[in-house]
Length: 279
Ligand code: C2E
Ligand code: CA
Ligand code: CA
Ligand code: CA
Image (cartoon, rainbow, N blue to C red; front, side):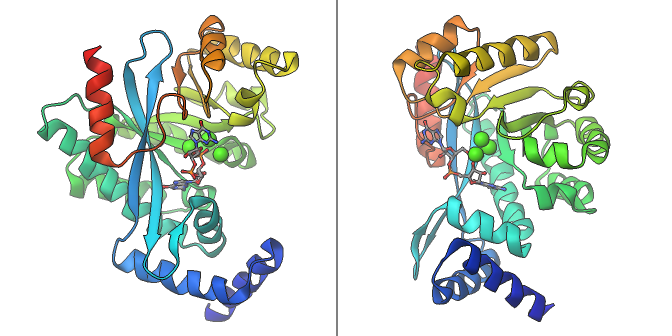
């Protein structure tokens, strides 16, 4: 097992052209961080397109390491997926998210739904359902406060298995969301079979939405289709006012992006939510 891990590490830095000493350091520090539960969770608000009220949050992992400094998820998440370390990292994140959600209630605030990212490897793990059930039990919290985000790629790679898993997660009470929609290859016949609540349109479509007719046409079509299938639509990576205005006319349900807020530490996310709900 040790040898296999080392091979994976070599492959990883070969592919990404990263300095091998950094990878070895990264590996050692990630393992330590898992032991110490040293990952933080930031929350990015999702805002109602029409009323601008906060409707929920997406939980995003953050890691500030004493040796490596701030390591972006774009670096450590792919590495963790490659090595399988994503499973214990994800468990640290989920535990913190469950606690933070309960803190909302303790503060007398509405427990807005929090979306969590689940990697392909984790989602496909035979123990995934049992382990998440166990964590909910230990946290004494209800699944209905949480949404599971899996990417379009993850679900389309194993469509038959996904239908089953989604049904079980639904039974537990989770809502279900497809992340990065538009970047993979969806089969519509599968899409209609999945018990989905939300589609998140990838940032690559939103970025050029005001300047490329084709992108706008695709987004328009995704929104119409989703509504016919009783799904809500979230636009990701919204940064500009003209994008917000256009998404409003296209009847997009929710907006997530720097235009409203970047991902925030829990306390700041709470303040954002309180302000938006007072207006
Ligand atoms: P994602 O799930 O697609 O998350 C959205 C990413 O877009 C986040 O990057 C967020 O900070 C960024 N973003 C949000 N609004 C804007 C915007 O208006 N403009 C731009 N340029 N970016 C925006 P982040 O936090 O760096 O995460 C990157 C990816 O790492 C995530 O993409 C997700 O795939 C993965 N990730 C992050 N946290 C977790 C986690 O806890 N578990 C798993 N499995 N993956 C995670
Ligand atoms: Ca996501
Ligand atoms: Ca996304
Ligand atoms: Ca993404």
